[in-house]
Every structure is written in C-alpha cells, then in structure tokens.
Amino acid sequence: MFCTALASRRLPILAVDHPPARKRQASDMTLPSQYPNHHVPVKYFLASYRALSDGRTGVRLLEEKLDKSTRSLLSEWKVLWIGTCTILRTSIDLFRIDGESCLAPRIREEIQAEWHAIRTEKEKHAIFWEFLRKERDSVIHQYEWRAYETWIKPDGTFRGPKLSLLIMEDDDGAKPAILMKEGLFKGRDSLELLRDGVDWVEERIFSAVRRAGFDPEEARSLGSFLPLPKIEGGLLGDLSSGDGDAEKDNKP
Image (tube, rainbow, N blue to C red):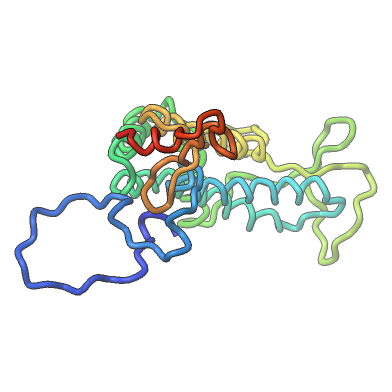
C-alpha cells in the first residue's frame, strides 16, 4: 500500500511525445479511494524499515523460544535464527531500493549516503559485515552455522544439549543459550548480538531520515506525503471570533 506499489489502475497510453523521464513522486500515484486520507509514520514509507520490523518480530520470537524452553531445543531455534539474520541483512540491502524509490528527494539522498557509508566504512559497521552478512551467507550458501546451542547451568558452567530421539526434561536447572563460536564476535551471546543488530539497523534508517529533515515518527499522507493538517483553536475551532473562518480562507 506504500508509494512503490500504490497504483490501483493505469491511464490509457496516448501517442504523444513525452518529456524526459523523471523520478516518480508520491503525489504521482493513483490510490484506491480509501487510502489518500490515511496517514502513517514516515518510517513505514521505507521498505528497509518494514523489513526491520519483521526482523524485530523474529528476535522477539527467538527470545520467547529461549525464555520458555525447559527442554532440549534439538536445533529448533535455527529456523528463527537464520530467518531473522536474513531479514535484517535484507533491510540494509533495501537501502538501494529506498534510494531509488518515489520518496522525498532529501530522504532518497540521505539513504543513498547512508548506504555509501556502510559500504565504505566496513570497520565502523562490523556488525553488518562480520555478523549479519557473514552469518546469513555462511548458512545459505554452505549451511555452516557460526552460532551454536549450549546450556548454562546455575553455577555458570556450560554443557551441550542432550542428544536423544525423544525430547527429555532437563533436571539440572540449565537454561538454553546461543553463542557465537567463531569470527569477530566469538564467544558473544548470539541473541544479544542479534538485538544489537536490530538497534544498529534502526539507527542507520532513523539517522538518514532525520538528516533529511523529517521525523521518523511523524504521520504523513499515503497519497501526497503531506503531514497531518493542523487544527487551530482546538477540536471545535476558534470560537472567539465569528469571522475567524473567513480570515483563514483568505490566507495563502
């Protein structure tokens, strides 16, 4: 329903000369009648943020999986893990899509600048290059997992999962955890690292939007990208003067 996929119908093609092509603007789009007056926060106009939102859901589901588990996971966490890593990596890849979209020019420019910084300052953005990107590629292309399941006992010591064809109750009070076994983040709590990844992606998106002069939380029209109209004088208008409406009508 957003600007890159909002057109609900096409106009007839006319045999006329057209001016040079230009980037589409949100105001160019033809919307279903129920959408033009709807407003959503600026952040949701970006495909990268919408992907990030799904990635944050993946982190929450993985947290619930670990917090509520009293049994051996038998690698069930892996599906949530690789899905979330992939979505977060994709959210950064989508900077290139947002940078060529029909968003406001200033937002497109800052998104492009942010992607350039991520690409050229790899040490500064190691959580992307050395974690999100490498973890996703390692699993997808080689099915090698750099994160592994372990169990932490109440005394702080570790043990591996109990391997069995049956899921058996654990009686030693150990809690499941996922740790990184290699790479720059070796030994780190993998779930904590994933949370850091979510926060890092959000900061990249929000900093670009703010540099463009917009508030990520400000509601904008789906049809025109204009902000919500301000109602002066409260809900019922300014009742202190009978000709207040006439004065406003004369304003440019």
